[in-house]
Image (cartoon, rainbow, N blue to C red):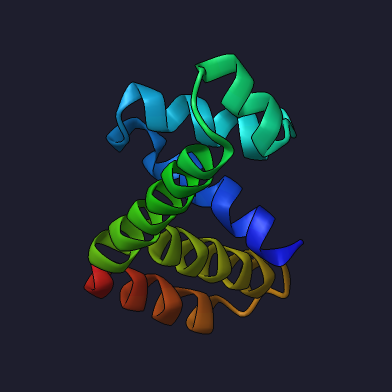
Length: 107
């Protein structure tokens, strides 16, 4: 299940970098939950060809993340903003200002 969620997040972030066929196959397999056989029949390809295309496409998505780290940065930003919100809610202004400065310096 964890890989499914990770691939879905990668696809949401980097899917536009894949070609149309790769996007279609990934979407059918991960989002529409079609089987390899169903996708193969719909595309007039062998089950093995579809499996290979899915694996290559998923590998590409992981390569994009390794190079660009957009998901990692997004997760870090969300964590930082959550902490900042907690600091502000607890009226810890000095720590909130310190955290804001750290976030600015990351940019």
